[in-house]
Amino acid sequence: MLQFYEKCKKAVIEGDSDLALKLATEAIDKNKPVLDVIEKGFVKGIEEVGRLWEDGTFFLPELVMGAEAIKKALSLLNPILSDQQTKGFKKGKVVIGTVEGDVHDIGKTLVATMLSASGFEVYDLGFDVGVDSFIEGADKWGVNCIASSALLTTTMQKQRGIIEKLKERGIRNKYTVIVGGAPCSRKWADEIGADGYAKDAVSAVTLVGKLIGGD
Ligand code: B12
Image 1 (tube, protein in one colour):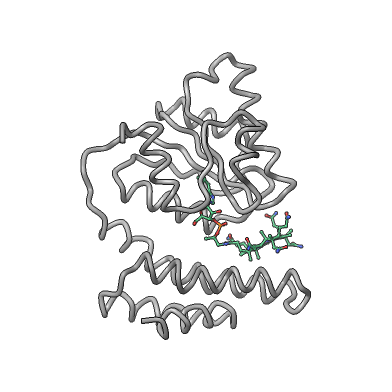
Image 2: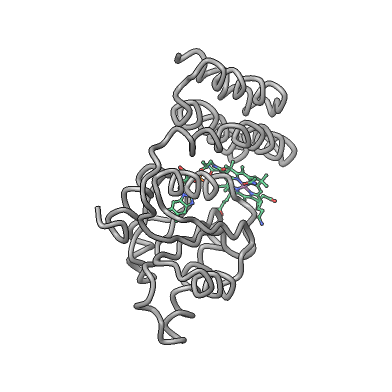
């Protein structure tokens, strides 16, 4: 199995979308554990791409190709992931999105998938979502939780913006607000007055379960 994860990782590092898609298909056909294939294979690949980009080995085209490869694989694997999980009664409603000015949506989509697979009703606003849109969505769908993702140190300020706007409107207590994304931390969540932070999709499910799901 380790060798298979390595192949998935390599396909993303090499930006080979066709191979990524082929491996995702093979994982489904051979009934491999989808969450592990994603996290121990494809996600490890995009993390390595990020590292190689940071140290100057890769340039933007390689970063984009790596992202395209993992997105291709996830377009097949995410729906399967939802089906593999047990679906019970709806535990609560969550609106999620990547903040304004930020197009990174791979991790956010994974969190959204895992939450809905775990029984939450999830409204995914996509990426580059303005503060007002989060709040309008929360209001429209009557959610319990507002979840935002930010991958850039610049855009993470918008997570603070969501909380400030809720306070300004006098509705901060109406919603549980959680944050995530690579530059975020428990400390960041505390600093901006969020109710929670989780480092990955699996712990996001545990967190939301604790905060709104009655777990
Ligand atoms: C893929 C990628 C891209 C792709 C994004 C494609 C897409 N559709 O998402 C593309 C090529 C478009 C891109 C563009 C850019 N990128 Co980029 N990118 C990355 C990379 C390599 C991987 C991100 C990723 O998908 N990781 C995999 C997922 C699964 O992990 P994740 O996103 O962290 O999500 C997990 C957790 O964080 C958590 N989580 C995520 N969201 C949430 C939300 C909640 C509520 C919770 C609870 C948890 C949670 O759960 C997720 C699943 O486990 C990172 C490097 C890195 N290591 O993060 C750089 C990185 C984020 N990018 C970076 C930069 C600088 C850029 C650009 C500015 C580059 C440029 N010069 O144009 C642009 C910005 C464009 C913009 N305006 O947004 C920097 C940011 C530096 C910084 N300090 O701000 C990074 C860190 C690279 C680096 N090492 O320097 N990028």
